[in-house]
Length: 121
Image (cartoon, one colour):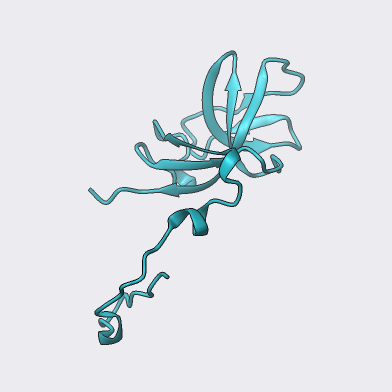
């Protein structure tokens, strides 16, 4: 079981936590449909996704408007925000243009990013 950690003063009650934590229980809803990938680049920086983050991607979820998705376009994978209303994939960095996907037959949405894990090193 997870223990809460005070961000201010330490809690002496949590000095000895002896139960194991299985992150799969907390982070993965559909194990058979979940994949992992490393984020590259800074196109989603304003959504908190940085170069080197570990992405947890659920392939079983519906690809909803506004979700961060992993999509294959012309065989190349990209991670962007799905704009269903305007048929686009959006970056979260003004340096990158939107990608028009309306009517594209070469588009495959591989999954929805459900978590990104950052390294503190």
